[in-house]
Image 1 (tube, rainbow, N blue to C red):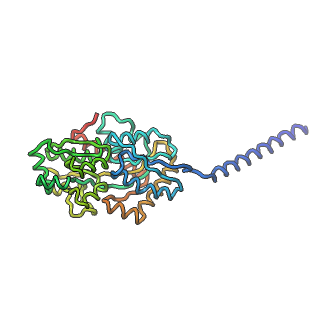
Image 2: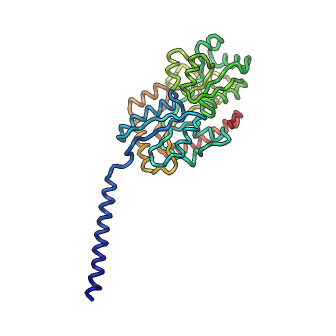
Image 3: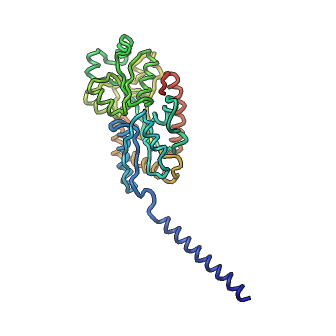
Length: 339
């Protein structure tokens, strides 16, 4: 009888000790340093110098301070943003690789490209919208003067009289810069030779150098050259004028009846590989929103023509879904397609 009584008691004590050890281990683990324990990479799917790069470098230092780890910008340009997007889509879902996505990578490319190396919906989880910006229809200032082009109407007249003589630079096939130009061409019946680059930075160098004629660039990356007089802004592509360039009309205002309803703005936001833990996603969103609300960052972006974001992951997801549907219609109407 004694042996039967002692054995259950011993088993009970052993189980109690094991439970205590498990509880202690779990508590210790929860108090150990968590994510991030090493640098975090923000992949920019375009070359340095463009708006995507500018915005990533505006928030990266703030996130580094907030999390106590370096957030490093990694430029992976090419194929209209598809190369960089694919890198992130195929990275581990551990919070250490993020994408500064764009209206191109997550709004346009699915409709424009016959085949993508990633699925913009299934392969990513949205974190937050970082900024929305208008594009600006611009020309090399010296070329515009030499050709007698002072406004959008002058541009249309020249382009119609000289089909194919104007080169249109862009940051790559499928970007909002490319599609804004294609939409302009389809609505005005003009033809310009499209010259895609690996980002706005390289394209702007050729614009300033006089090797390219026109570009529908994201405003932040062109602002310095416009203010310096190297580029002339003919119009902004948003529905309303930009507070950063209040004297520059919209394309719809300047273009007359043919361009009624023209609107082709851009946006940029952080995304992570699908499966990234929700708590990491939420923490990044919260700290990014705080960074965008600080006076220094907010004023910097507004001065460049960007409107700071900070949307919740759910709001950003709905935004992306709406952009998919909108740009699918624009691509279809423009006739643009990339194999």
